[in-house]
Image (cartoon, rainbow, N blue to C red):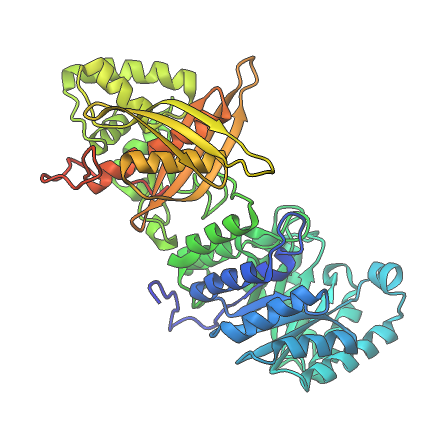
Length: 535
């Protein structure tokens, strides 16, 4: 793997059990088709997770099909299906897992007083009997059995020990102690795992696992506390998705154990450079963008706007970055130009866009920049280029959106189309009319026809902002062009031009980075700088 983080001197290897496709997928708003689950499973396999919980085979025919397809087509990780402690569920899980090179059935059964009384209507003796019966049967149906004492955190300690001992005796090799409702604190989790590892008899050949929910925002901290206490498996999901407030975010746990190896002295075996690809794939499949401030994978995780921070990072990344963006699959950090930015960042961005601003002109450019930033917040490249050209009297070969018209079609034989007009210092005003799956798609096609640059939209987010009488639309877009990602941004008064203008902004960055002329051909001389931004 490109970034294998295993450490030969570490005393213990931590396994990652990914439940993105089960616990994550069953959360409202995150449903995936069997095909989408298979694509996501491929990304998880590339990342190197140890176990993929592919679904809950007994939940539906579709879920069983998804588990079976993943078991058939994905090699490397152990493939797992969730199951209740009943024969029907177990046989359905076993059937779906048959094609897997290595299979695991994950049995869960509530053990806490509230679950025994309100949900199961079972006595302690009945819970133990169901545990023994289901684990024993599962042991004959697959390679591995994991037992989860659901709501373990609110279970009496003596009974929790009994339940886990019962599962271990019946053949469970993984004993999961879930904080099902996200109630525990790290100190409590640490103390509980220490107690269980010491007192559960017959578990010498089993590993303890932590499955922590994030209701109080402590899922990652609790999972790491369990690891400190002796757990050898962390369960969670990419981007922290899952029931209610979600699960432990696996990418965060992975990077904690990687970045703070000095504090944990543990071994993991994942390719962290595939984290961003898995995160983006999940966001694309589910239609749920990652929050900008999300640790590790958020757009701001390696972005800087404050002038002091930008100056430090320009001189040495280590001043404000404890991880390299390349470690998680990015090709660089991002300096965001806004009202907090200083001259160093402005000069650096201008240089990337091909402008060498003379010292005598920098003061005037910076003053105009600050005024624009106070009005608009974050400044897009197109705005900056126009500002620099206006102050310095220079010209730059970038496209500018001057007009867009669209027609949306609903029913019948009408076809969506868009008419786009772009202006260029060399080519002048160019107009194109294109069709597409929808009017915005048609507008993007028209821009491609004009600029000669083919692009795939990987992300597009449009938000209404403003609470003081003026409401604007901010569009953020990521295009994939010739294998690289280019970001674009626009801020306008309306949704339609915002999306198209952001698309044009991204195209301009790609043209500069690829050293292309006004007709999409490579220039004979190298461009002064590369403006690619992998934020």
